[in-house]
Image 1: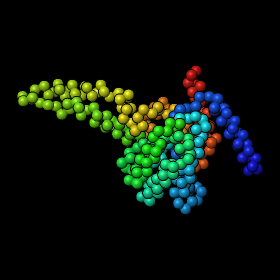
Image 2: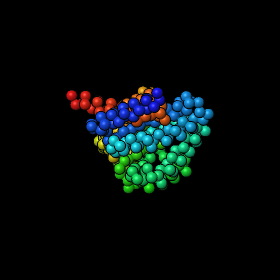
Image 3: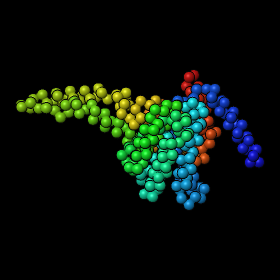
Image 4: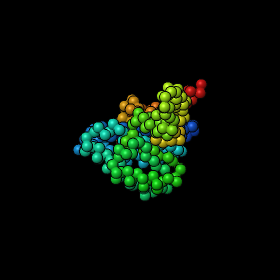
Length: 278
C-alpha cells in the first residue's frame, strides 16, 4: 500500500510539474519557513533543535525545485527579530544551526556548481560575531554568481526594515538640508528657512527613493509569498515589498513541505494571474 501511494504521488508530481512549466512562473518567491518547533513537538523529539535542523536541510530541496522551474530569486525568512524573545538556549541553538548551514554553503558543490549567489538581509549587527564572519565569507565567495539569487533574512522584521530604510534616507538627504536653521543676527527669516527645508524633504519622500534604502536594494518585489504550518498571516515578512504579492498558505510544517506543496503554490499563483487578466 505504501509503495502504491508513493508511486501515485510520483506520477502526480511529474504531471503537476509539467503543467506548471507550461505557464509563466514567478521570478521571485518569498518563503516563510514556519513550523519547525511544532513539527519537533509532534514527532516527540527531546529537543526542538532537531526540528530546526531538519528545517535547515529542507532549504536545499526547495532551492533545487526553484532551479528546476527557473525561478531566479528566492527570499527565505530564517530568523526574525521576534525570535530574539525565545529562550537564550533556543536562540543560541538556532544561531549554531544557521552558522553551520552557511559554513557548509561556502564550499558547497550545490551552491558553487549551480552558481547561487547568497546574501543575508536584516539587522546583521544583532547577530553573533562568529556568524557575521561566516556571512561575510559566504557573500564574498558567491558575489559573482547569478544563476539564482538566494536572500536569507536573519534578524529581520518588516517594520524594522522600513524604519531602517527611512533612517538611512534621512541621514543621506536630510542632514545636507538646513534642518538646523542658521539664524541671522537679528533672528530673522528663521521660520521661512525651516519651512523651505521641510518642504524640500517632503518632495524627496517617494516610494522610489525609500525603496533605494531597503535591505535588498534593487531586487524585484516577490510575486508569490508562501507560508508553511497553517498560519494565515505574513508577520511582517517583506512588508514594504509585498504590496502586490500573491499569498499561499500551506498546512504542512516546514520540514514536511513537499515538492507537490510547492508546485501547488506555483499553480495557484498562475491561476490567479489568469483571472487578473480577465
